[in-house]
Image 1: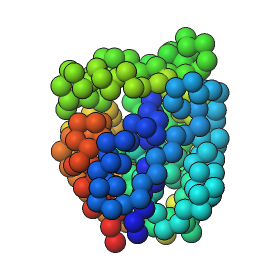
Image 2: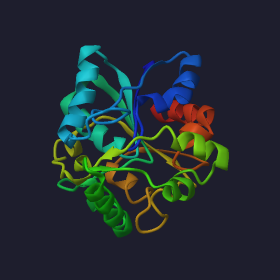
Image 3: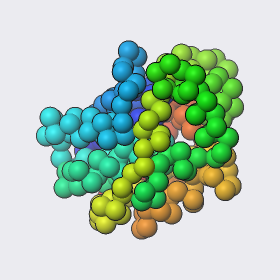
Image 4: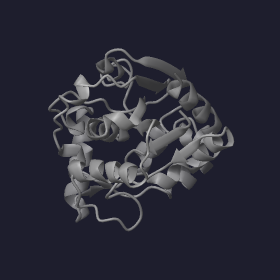
Length: 241
C-alpha cells in the first residue's frame, strides 16, 4: 500500500489537506485529495448525501485507484462508509479520523448534540440556499482550540458554507456493517468539536466499527492545520498493515 485518498470534512474542500498531503508525499506516498460534490468555493450546495458519495466513487473509478487507504475526517466518515459499500474491492483499509460512524438508518443530525441540531437547522433555514456557514465562535473554541488566534483566523477564511441536506439524509448502512475491510480510528485527544462525554468521538463512535485499530495523538479537530506533520505520521500508523 502506497496510496492515500483523503476525504475532507464539513466546511472544507480537498485543498485544505495540502499541508498533510505534502508531508505524506515527502514520505513517498501517492496522495489524492478530492473535493466532495457541493463543497468548496462556488459550488452548488443543492446536493444529497448520495450525490456527495458518488462524487468520490467517480473520482476513484475515473483514476482506476486500487489498494489505497481511504481516510475520512469528521463528516467525511459518513462518506467513506458509503464509498466502501460501492467499491470495497479497491480499498486496502478505512481510516476514520475523528469521524462520524453512523448507525444503520441514522443521519449525521441524529448523532450530534441537540445544540448543534438546533444551530445547523436555523442557519440552513436562514441561508437562502439550505447551507450552514461555520460560526466563528464555534470554529475558534471547539474546532481550533489547539491553535493560536492567527492560525484560527487564517484557516477560518478558507472555509465555505456546508450543504445541509447531507446532514439530514438517513443512510442505509447494512452493507457497510457486513464488510470485512480493515478499519482504524484515529482520535485526537483534545478534539472538542463534539464535546467529550455522552456525545464524544471516542469511544462512542469508534466502538461501532467492531474490530478496529485505535491510534491516538494530541490535538484538536483541525490538526491538519495545527500539526500537519504529526497528523501525517499518525495516518501512516493508522494505515499500515
